[in-house]
Picture 1 (tube, helix red, strand yellow):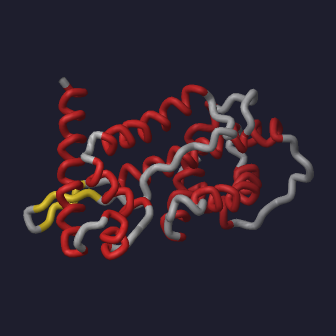
Picture 2 (cartoon, helix red, strand yellow; picture 1 turned 45 degrees about the vertical axis):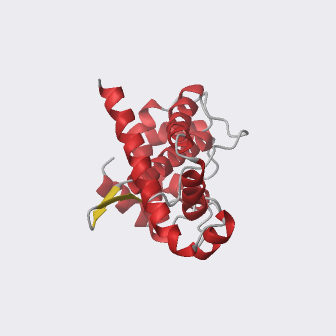
Length: 212
């Protein structure tokens, strides 16, 4: 099912199938039934959107809508590989979490300006809830990305790590960071920039070692 077909399916009038078991719905999805995809979209869009907009993620409505679309596109591409021993909701949840991770990776980019390298660390990855039922393979994949970044932050000097966490995790203003760390407010900006450069160096060093 193409992206165009999915878009048309989402916006055309819905036909009612009556009561369908999840197994029956999955069979119809795998057969490329457009109305089955509409049923799935109607049934899970709000769930996926609310998951992406979770209070700890700080993702805008527009970005959340884009991520939702990506999640359903991933589902279209991967439905043939879906095994019925899993729960469809859990599978969709896993796809959404993976897309959120990709969103964070996109944000964690180098921004060059005025000769200074900096990194946007807004919306750093969030821990996966312990009660979420993912396959061991999926948990390893997404947890490893979070743990890698967590480890890299841990290699910074304490004051640098705290400055980045306060600024980009707790979204504090410079004055608040100044009060929290007991340093002059005028020094906060320089501390954050220096901390970002150090973090970037750690990331590049680890990438070089991995590629060697």
